[in-house]
Image 1: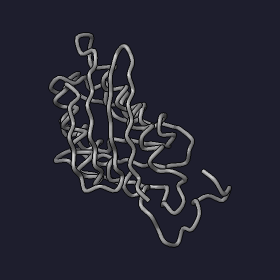
Image 2 (image 1 turned 90 degrees about the vertical axis):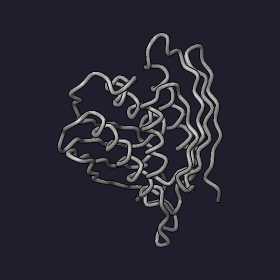
Image 3 (image 1 turned 60 degrees about the vertical axis):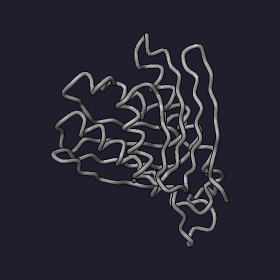
Image 4 (image 1 turned 180 degrees about the vertical axis):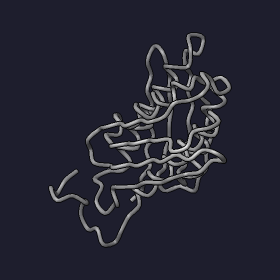
Amino acid sequence: MIREVLAQRNTKETQIQMKLNLDGTGISDISTGIGFFDHMLEGFTRHGLFDLQLRVQGDLQVDDHHTIEDTGIVLGSVIREAVGDKKGIRRYGSFILPMDETLVLCAVDLCGRPYFSWDAQFPTEKIGGMSTEMVREFFYAVSYSAQMNLHIKVLTPGNSHHMAEAMFKSFAKALDMALSFDPRITDVLSTKGSL
């Protein structure tokens, strides 16, 4: 089974083309027009061992909001589609990731019910050309579009760059774990029989 999806989303605010392979090797080709956001998505791709091709043309003359939020919406929908019927996957994943002085926890449940919990506060308003408030908006968009339960909690705060990077990498590791197959799981991992 190939868990790979190609998607396109065009609005008056953004034009997005994305190709995601959940069973890749960490190869990325990303251009969103926001350098730090590209850096975060490259880290997500590499540490989750996903393959991601992404092109975004957004209304950056306004600000970075539409570009980042809409990318999260597309990424979430692509994850949801690529996962398929969820038979055989572990469903849950969690990871605590250190990034120098910072420590971030991320937990994922691919349950089909969107919920997002966030416990973080950045000490700065921007990282490079990206607004730090958009980190939360990105993950919120991913969780609801993917219909996943996603918790992100900063256990030890510090430098804004380190905090954001730890979030993207811990999300990648937790998602990779949740997406992985277990031969003991022959159907979906639910007492209800469906997710």
